[in-house]
Length: 193
Image 1 (cartoon, rainbow, N blue to C red):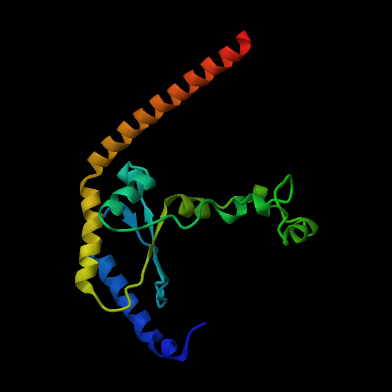
Image 2 (image 1 turned 180 degrees about the horizontal axis):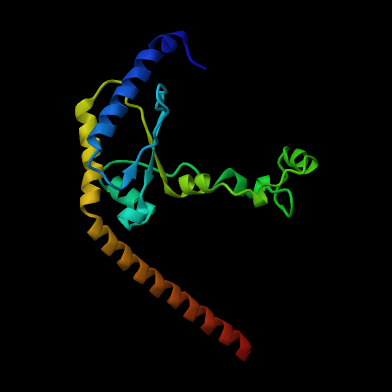
């Protein structure tokens, strides 16, 4: 609930958030690996959160790597959803064996089956999106330029990020091989007894 004093400030704060989002979008024009959603003409977002898509096919780094690089620059972004809602097990009444949520009987009675629902745009958004809290409710054009500079710096170091991913992937494979080898040794020891 909003207090009356907050409601009186709301229009001004939303306008400032929009102004800051516009300034940020303008400062991000040189960033080729991030895309922002386009709103219909005449529509404006209130920007509680700022959503964007990482064009990982263009960046050739994983979204998680991009997220870590931004965090190193002091910019905190995160994926919004781990999976499309239609893929959530607790919305799949066929074969679901977890705690029964109150809506499960209604889905079953209505024969609502999300298992075969294909939502390619949703799948794309979930796998490419990054969200950023947008608590910039005072105009701050310089701050928006600094924020965009962090994204542009990360973009300028994509080669380094690719090298980092290769190193991490090799390390992960070595670690997995070590675990498998240890498990095989342990299994062989049990067989001898």
